[in-house]
Amino acid sequence: MASWVSTLLDSAIGRWCGVPQAAALLRPAGESQCFKGTVLVCGKASEHSVLLRQHLSCLPDVAFVEGADTPLQAIIFDGTELQSTTELDLLWQQLHNLLPRLDINGRLILLARTLADASNADAAAASAALSGFTRSIAKELGRFGSTANLLSLDYGVQQSLVPVAEFFLSKASAYITGQVVPVRRARVKISEWQKPLQGKTALVTGAARGIGAAIAKTLTEQGATVIGLDIPQAEHALVALMQQLEGKPLLLDISQANSAEIISDWLTQQGIKLDILVHNAGITRDKLFHRMTEAQWTQTLEINLRAVQRINAFLLERQQIQQNGRVVLLSSMNGLAGQKGQTNYASSKAALVGYCQFMATQDHRGITFNAIAPGFIETQMTAAMPAIPREVGRRLNSLHQAGLPEDVAQAVAFFARPDAAGLNGSVLRVCGQCFIGA
Image (cartoon, rainbow, N blue to C red; front, side, top):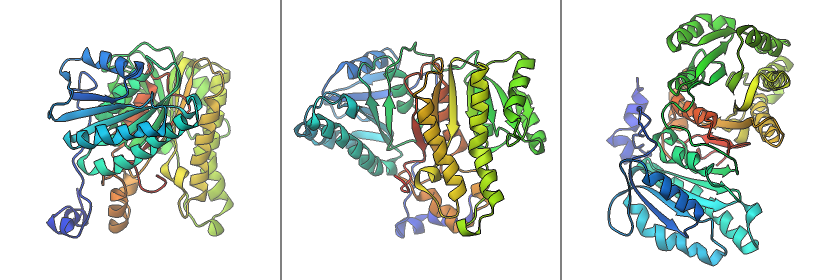
């Protein structure tokens, strides 16, 4: 239930006082395809935009328009062939008149080459400019509930682009905006939009409640069989959830030194190998650094970081994560931006990013490693905050509202897809483009 502070700020009084007002976001509701509506493709045509046009044109209820005054649900700007900063004028020439036609909850996707693939310094500058444009225009579109994201494409990216574009066109990306997402070259077979995880087995840590429970539910809805892991104190909630999802509960405190071995032995006894491993479990032990005890420091790093490393190392060594499996790590905006009183937590979450990016460079039988950094998400923890800081936190992003656990869950499911092989070492912020650390 909304507090009286929320009600006041969302009223005419709040608007009169200049409080940013949020547009209602459209989130997934069992759609049979990624996107429906009108799309306009602009920029300099390349094989990438041609591929997307071909793919999307095969979907029912998707219409491509050109220069008419038709309202648009999506715009795709192809900047992969920009060779000089002079050509950046295309952004103004084409998008200046198009963006006012973008509907509420619309999607703007920009395509660019990676800097490593630029043919010269001028082309590299043009590519970098697109990232600044994307982050800025996302802050202008946010009040309409619309998003803008940039896909940075390696040389030779073709089919691996399609599932990424599908996600950012879809309602599943409602709370993700202002992001630059690197897409690597990979051989993929496009998955069905519904039930892409059919036949897959996923282990989710910290699954009993909050974001972990939402992840377990979403993976199940998309076809996976879920093993939910949580501490013994959460037995009642975890068992009830797993019964609801027809999954399996695993009660374990991952801070135990032998937790990785216990998980491995349990999987062996059950005859299970994992397709998806989601490290969601984590704790906070907030305190100003000069007042922080060694136990508060050590416990936070032990659960948030070292347990993750131990579990991964053990399961990888025993090959209990399937070939072409998916490992998803839950980092945090505070790990990227820092936060007063959270030196331990921010250190652990920043470490996960570095760990993820390094693991992505190694040969792990096609297993990908990706991280998600949630922003202000409506959970039991945020509900317990004092009213004023909570309301400020909700509005400190381009969409002027807090995210929901399902927003994080949709991002996890996106990384878990079999056709998401082109995403490896990514750090995706699910934060509505939080102004902190942006």
